[in-house]
Length: 480
Picture: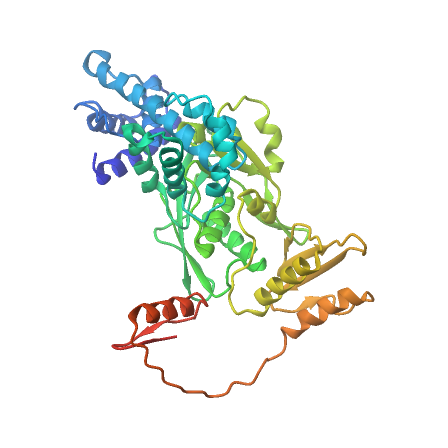
């Protein structure tokens, strides 16, 4: 199938789920029948492609044809082929997710690998001894690149060539098509009805004045959820107040609860700001609200329905609010890792991301980075920071000193200003130093002619790493 057909089929399956939930399955609505017929024509009237590796579509097709079975005499062989393909793809993606999941033990990775091939008995010991799995997980590569690196390690160091398996190659290509900076799977539910959907949220940060906008008409509830997520990350110094947020949601049906979009929006914004790509095996649901001066992740509706939808679309992990934990316990969600979180910082830690604010030239960002550096050099422990209203708060806890709470606001001001302990006074004076205007600027103009093109490129890359506000290109040179 080409990309257009895949996209159309994905949209039809989502619409079919919505319409089926609205009607009696014994007498589906004409609108559902129309979508169902279109799905059957795309997947059953011709031979279903054996080289189709998109698990969310395969899983939804298997579910749909189980709920509303097509004519067995006409389509029986294709239906069985879809089921078989879905099982094969699920096995490979289980293995991929274990490679990416930092909490998965090497024993689990090897156990799942043995379902694909038959390795020798020393594989586990060699994998643990090498430390390569942990190194790959901690790298800054995108998910598909981490998987590729692990597959290369298996082939080059352990003599296991998984690239010869068509299913592995195909699933890796399908995974790449779902990756993107500023992209995350949101879980939405329609109140009062037994239906939820996995909806891809895509988002970009652009220079501007802090506005949010959707590329298509959307509900005001969605817009407010995005704005609260934006404000929470601004308060923590993770995104700039001067950045506009432009987002797109495949579904803008206002009947779906939009407040639960907040946690996915935080994921997208943080990823867009830090150029991080999160794996497509994970979905998010949770409302982001300011409560008692702290940005928290609040409970949402329809958790059981959302977890069912996540499983149906091939998700292996879901982040939910701690307030919804009791709803999870009523069922056995086999094969689904459920992580509960209570506030923004805890959530970002659970994502295994670096919580360094943006290296922009704001006083707040410089003070936060200065505080973290000072504590690291001094060997002081810092509790997880709290994103509060208009700032971020740190609790410093050295072994031989009383705890110190330092708050750095969006404006760049910080409290406290004074402390009776000499070591703490040194830190506070250092933070106050960021308020100074700094060294006066002198006009210095010098010209250097560098004929070595390799050296010129190294200089250019070095300057670019300083993250200038603008790069200007002219015919014979570049300047920042």
